[in-house]
Structure formats: C-alpha cells, structure tokens
Image (tube, rainbow, N blue to C red):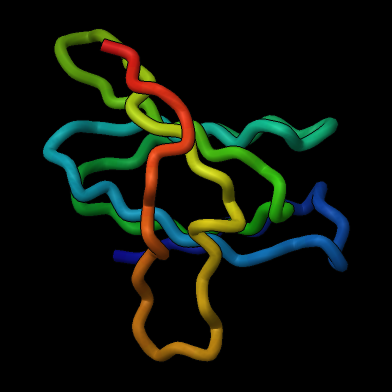
Length: 103
C-alpha cells in the first residue's frame, strides 16, 4: 500500500512530491540529507511504496539491510525521483545512482 509522508518542517514554496519503491527483497532504510534542521529516516519493507515531500536539492540515501548489516546501496537527488503530477502513472524517474555502493 502506498503511504504519504508530509514533512512539516519544510517551507511550502520549496517542497516537491517524491516517490520511492523498495523493489528489492531486503529491508531498506532511507534517509533524507542536505536539509537544514530536519532529520528524516524511515524503514521501507520489500514492495513498500512511499511518497514524501522534500526540497529539490535534498539527497535520498538508501541503505540495504541484510544479516544485521546496513550498507549504503545508492544516493539519489530528490529532484530526480520527483513525481510527475501531470502523469497518471506513479513511477519513479530514472533512478541512476549518483553516489557509491558500500559493500
């Protein structure tokens, strides 16, 4: 089931709606970075979909959890996973990894 999370600490004029889906078979932990005075972290189960608001220059870090280990699997700019509100389909945009993979 899709969930929506509205971040109350962000200014109304700068917010964008973003979408992430955990397409893996592992639990993920996502964190929003690059936002002053805001800490956002959430556990995402396999197949779970998440809508959230962020500023365009925010960075989404995605950690995969396996065997009690948490590894950074990708880093994405929130502007790249922005929901196209003119479209009727809810798919994340091209999720190219902007960072590095931690093994």
